[in-house]
Structures are given as C-alpha cells and as structure tokens.
Image (tube, rainbow, N blue to C red):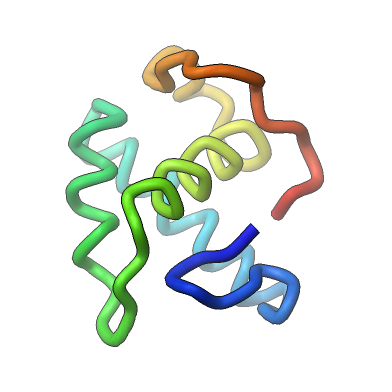
Length: 85
C-alpha cells in the first residue's frame, strides 16, 4: 500500500501510528467518511495523496484504531484486514 506515492512499508511505526490517529481524529471531527476524506486529502503539507490513498488509510485506521466509527465507513468491496498499519 502506498500513501502519496510512498510505500507504507518505508514508514516507521511511530509515523504509521501518527497517520492512523490523524485519520481517526478526522472522522471523529467530520462525522462522515466523505467529510474526513476531503479534510485528509489536503491537510498534510508536502504530500499529494490520491483519493484512493486517503480512503484506504482511513478505512484501515478505523478498523485498527477507532472501530467505534465503523458505521461511518461505506462498504465498497472487501473489508480491510487488521495489521495493515
């Protein structure tokens, strides 16, 4: 999985956790998947993640870090598995 053209495997654990917490905070604040996507696509200076990158990060983050927001994630195919962050 890539994020803004960078393989997620190159990020250290702290960076991955920070991105995941950031995704959870966005969906908590926005109260919708689409709102969180819009915020996340432009909030990280110096990166230009695709909408697919942001959606994947958001889905995986919710599954692994903030499952209380699962009801806000639309089902568009296979559910993300745990352990991707």
